[in-house]
Length: 102
Image (cartoon, rainbow, N blue to C red):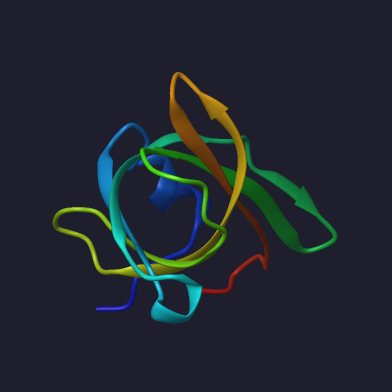
């Protein structure tokens, strides 16, 4: 089963806990996280744009992560740490994808 990267699929996962597993070349390691926000979807010139915000414990670490929600296929997402809130690292993933793409 291929994981969907559509806004509506992530919106259904908002607020759910997940595991963030860094790729070995990005330092490896696993941390517990939560998909804290799915920002509003915008359409421009045949593309949809939106961003995801994750919160997790541990030291900030930019890179490619396997993002795992219980009962969902693994999604590989590039996460960038953008700040610290409440002692947790806030990560952002930005999407700009053609409308109608899987």
